[in-house]
Image 1: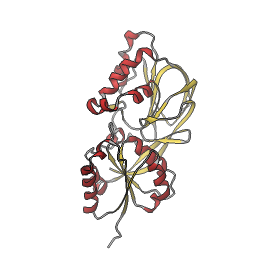
Image 2: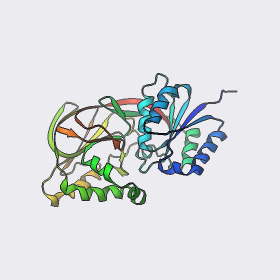
Image 3: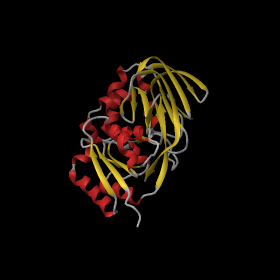
Image 4: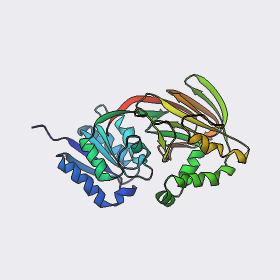
Length: 296
C-alpha cells in the first residue's frame, strides 16, 4: 500500500471566501475522502505563509494555498527557494483571483480542492523583478494608484468594473513617467502612464493577452506600455487598446520578451500580483521558465 501523501494546507483567514468556515470544511472533506494526510496552518500576519513554507514545506508532497493572489505570491516566493519543491495546489479565495483564472481553477473551494486531489500536474513560469518573484503581473505607474485606491467593498460588488470607475476618476490628475527600457535588446524611450509585465493572460479580471493554453509556460513575458496623451478627448484609446489583445492601439503597444530593464527619471510605484511593491526607479525583469509545478 502506498504511503499517504502529506499535504500542508495554508489558509489566509481574512481572504474573501475563507471567512466562511463552511467552505474550508468542504475543502478539508475532499482531502480526507482522497486519503491525504493534512496539516493545516492559518496565517496570522503578512508574510506568515512565506516564512512557514520556507521552514516546513520540504516535509510535504503538496502545499495548498487558500487565499488571494497576494498570499499565493508569498507562497511561490518561498517555494522557489526550496531544494525539494512540493507540488502547489491553489484554492482561489480572493477578490479577483487572476492567477487561478489562468488555470481555469474554480472559485468554489470544494471544487478547487477536488482538483487538487484529482487534477493533472503542470508547470508554470515565474517572473522575477530584481530579487523578487511574481506569478502573473508586475506593473508600474497609474495602474498602482488604481489598484491601491479602489475600494475593497466596491470590488466585491462590482468586480473588475470597480477598477474602471477608479481609473476614470484618477486619469485627469496623474502625470506620466519618462522611462527608458530595453526589451530583449530593443531600446525604447517614452512618456508612460503605466506599464504591465504579464505572465499569463488575465489582470484585474480582464484578459489583456491573447488566450493560449501555454500562456503560463511559454518562456516569455508580455509587456504592455500605455503612453501619455495630453488630450483628454483621446483617453478612450486606452481601454480600446488594452482590451483588444491582438493589436497595438494608438497609445498602447505590446511586446513579448524574456528580459527587460527599466530606468525612470524618478522612483515609480510598483504592484506585484496586485500587492504593493517597492518604489523603484530601476528594475531588471526576467522570466524564470518552468519554475514550479501546480495541480490543475
